[in-house]
Length: 253
Image 1: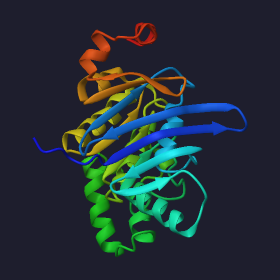
Image 2: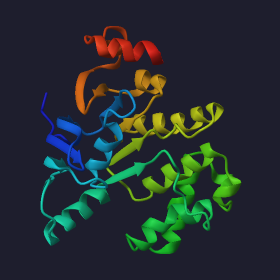
Image 3: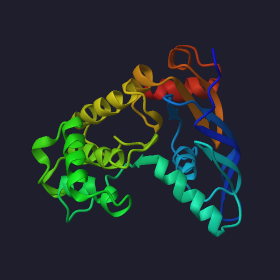
Image 4: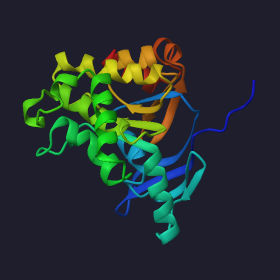
């Protein structure tokens, strides 16, 4: 079997806030194309910070991040580095806990905003693609609605469509269902499952263990800014090696 080059490669990543809040402690991670990684762990363990470092929403303190061949070491900002960060952000979509839709724009306008303003795609083409994406997330009938008229689950699906409109190679999800009412979680998870089945590389921080069990290729458990356990979901959920993992899973499963 030929070895593929990882599409995400993280080496010795540290993040320190202020003088002494050491949130990430020497993280390594390789993610293969089309792999679905789910990161679990207690609140405050560093999961969201790790995701935000991947696309430099958070500046790593030390270490190296490589995304699809673009290598960025932590360190001094400069013009070349800013360009590299722009390049990797173009390759990655990110969906947050909060939906962050523009309230003054309709669902369709939210989806086409990036392609038109950032990628300079002609508006007619962006609209056609935007309509396809809204159909893909099951919201064709909501194209002209404003976010305030949509449920949380619908808003999050628009947010996913908006990310996909930029044609990313990688999707990052930071607890995408944690702000949703329980009955709306399924519709968002279903879209994420379809995305995984279509071969999208995904790194997902979530408490949705069904998604982790059904969709993840690998589950990584984080505590105190380090991986304490990683493996296929069936291994992590049925036979975790670490006592800390067992205790955490006992609370949530």
